[in-house]
Amino acid sequence: MAAFALAAALMVAFNVAPAADDAKYPNWKGQWDTINHRLGGQVIKFDPNKPWGPAQQAPLTPEYQKVLEESMADQAAGGIGNYPTARCLPGGMPRMMAAPRQEYVITPETTYILLGTEIRRVFTDGRSWPTGIEPTYQGYSLGRWID
Image (cartoon, rainbow, N blue to C red):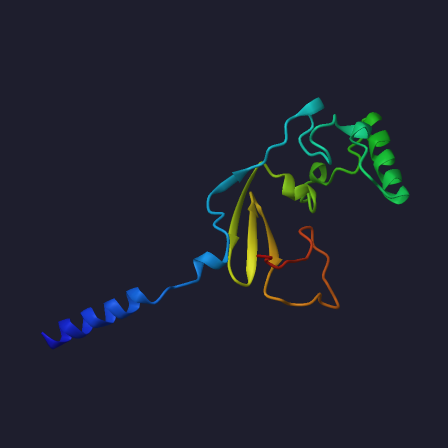
């Protein structure tokens, strides 16, 4: 009987203590679908309200405007242009954020963004930028919660 009373007392004690402060972080549970209608057939765009290609009028630096023009010229000639997934490479940032379905897992130290086969980590533990970042397709992200 004493063992049963001790077990019951321990269970009550554990049920009162909160496992985590859920109110501190947003509840983004579930799967998120992107809203990006297909104007002109392309899903990934700078501005979803404009047709794809040059009509996007993305604010590119002259260096990257040249990259875009060379890619488009290569595609017009039947090539694959600057299209990493056509070479079986990951889409990388920011392209990976256009995945049609995303799931967010929020912990105090890191927010994980699950994008099909890719995972993006946003570190929210207060760390500083490292001095030697290894280049990855997902990039390196730091964030902090405001309010």
